[in-house]
Length: 268
Image (tube, rainbow, N blue to C red; front, side):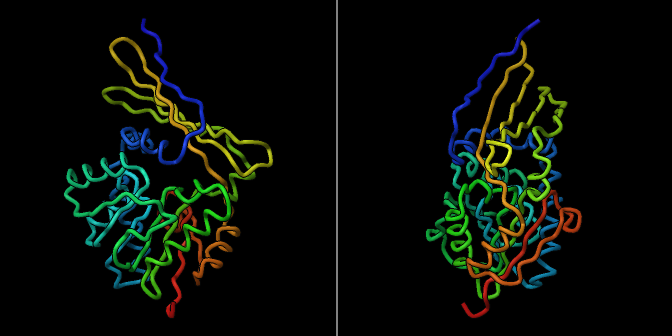
């Protein structure tokens, strides 16, 4: 019987390195049902956008990753530009958009500085817990201000993050393992490595076991996060110039995470 060949790196890496490494396996976070997630999340975000800004057309997804939300919205008729700090994620997003027949433009940009993105937008989007990669208040403020500069007057900001109000109470160590039937068969385990019992900082570690002819291989991807409460996030958004900040639970939004919406000032 074969053993497990490990490929683990326990050093702390940047968000860029994290997502460059995870890009080929990112769909496994959805237990290999990523195409369904594209459609489902696109539908949920479309409803939310239409309720808040019925005539919205142009969307900037400034942390698009491999394209989960950007492709879903493009398939529903939006003009979408997706950006991300990870070059390998953008390469995969382009390939997935072609495969799914979605017309999306892409670029490589850090969401703390969106000056290289041309034009302005009805909606700026940052989903899948991207903003908590910013480990201090200054970084979050800079990103929110940058997002505001890309919105038309009265435009809509949409952000989704984990339910950190609950996570800071429970401090979960793991998430349920995901089993992917394959082939090849895979097991995805997510471990939350908190810096301390009172710290908002933690490392997420993805362990991906893949069955091969000679046994199982183990890959490890890790990224740093800061748990941000809804109240702290609201204060940061308001300080960055947004108004009408509101939160929906995942259940209310039909989404897999709580969602914050806010508006750019109409007179900015």
